[in-house]
Length: 508
Ligand code: ADP
Image (tube, rainbow, N blue to C red; front, top):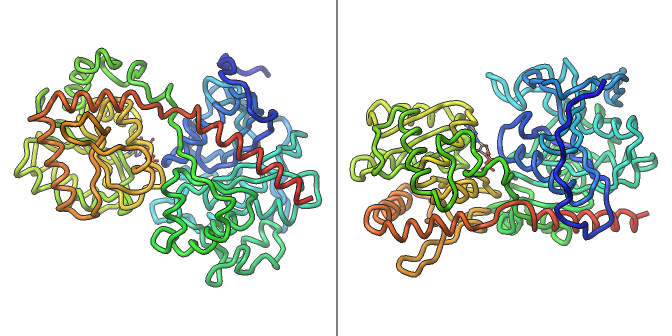
């Protein structure tokens, strides 16, 4: 059966290293399944690498909620996956990443992936997450064998794929996959995938790997640590976060491992999918805009946003937008604490989109009820609204306690929306501090993770909005001028893959 493939863009650059075969294995891939920024990266970097001339393929689980359009076809032969003690089979679905020729494969297994959620159901994390994602790792590698396609590099992401480099170094070392180099990207140190040691048996990893300089941590298997020890090269998603995680404060118990491996660890800033997040082509905006039409375009988007969230229609009021997981890491408890004080003293509106912590959801709903027309909340996941908030807000709030990279502040700048961020991780690398009267900066940064610090900075942003609109307009344009696309950073991955392949070969 022939299935639809859209024309791929022509190669934009010539490769700096010989074309490589690169396997991406991830629990999330935009636009098919997304929980956070990991999906954005895995949905966009492979396309840029393919445009550089590399043969890139992506494998992820076919969760129960995955919608398979007519571009997907089932591979005729079942995929045997070497896990557990009895035969395990998967059905493999195949398509391409949109607007590319990058093949994507979704592994279907009713028992492990039939549920719609990625990590957690209504009662918390799935108890068999260790087995589910071990299956993904082993299934992705078995698929390569079935396809007769042996990658040069396998690129794994976060704890869910931490056992993949272990498999390559141990169980599969003396197989046709034994020469495959691995790159392991940490998107977030806070999630480490602790599991019972049964997962090693399930994945056919030798019990001898249950030791502190491999997979063991505190008497359990730590899958993030396993990836950190075993991958040929390590990356994380911003240069500042690469430094932070080597400290006790940022390492979440694994800083010593990261210091041990620091020669192999590189911080490469995530790029954004500049075709998807482009205000000039955004179908979710009432009137797409570029730098020349910024004022009229944003005004239309602001009114549409106000209407969508039940805010008072007012083109002149300063609107602060939030699109985020509602989690302590994102510092939204600081917003919750400062919110009544801000609303009582400043002429502002807030637009919240997100879900997560029930306490935060309740607080923002409470604010919407008590400040009608000034606070709008949508609890849940809504891609169209995420785009509208980026276009229709004046400021984008991101007071994160920790932020490995953060994508939404980059989207905001692309949309001429000024970010207001806490100075941490990737937010330091992407948002330059505004300096009054100097024509410098792309946003507002604050240092202390406290509600008063946030309150003061919101006040500073408001004063700039109402008293120095020309300066704010110039800052918006500076933000729109920044190039956050993958271009240069995909080149850094290309270089890193080259080093990984050379190191793997040298290891024999
Ligand atoms: P993280 O990965 O820590 O959640 P990032 O800023 O790196 O944070 O990426 C978050 C991604 O998820 C962005 O693309 C953002 O637009 C999207 N997102 C987060 N929450 C929602 C939501 N409720 N609805 C739609 N998109 C969301």
